Image 1 (cartoon, rainbow, N blue to C red):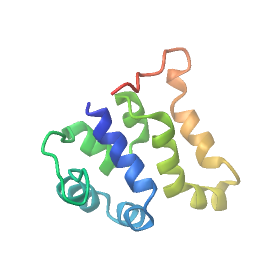
Image 2 (image 1 turned 30 degrees about the horizontal axis):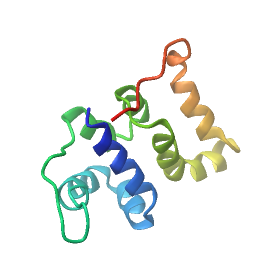
Image 3 (image 1 turned 90 degrees about the vertical axis):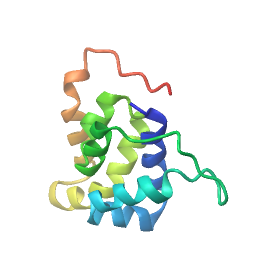
Length: 121
């Protein structure tokens, strides 16, 4: 897994309302766009060709599969905060405060007795 690249995606999208909106509305289109235009940018004038998402990473991002991302070693906090931004308001309206966070935790219960995956890049 390119933990750096996945974490860059999570960090970048979570901090830009336009990216977050585009990712929420059409994940596949946005992930494709991010890989081509946003992810490779190092600065306004520099790009990199070194990093790329794996097929599994791409699928997890497109499917909003935060459990798979966690299991692949995505940074826990970056993973959680991005999906809170996407789902918290809807879940709170439907099921009450912190309902998405509880769901996130419940879906990761199988890790309760295991060491967390390394987030080292």
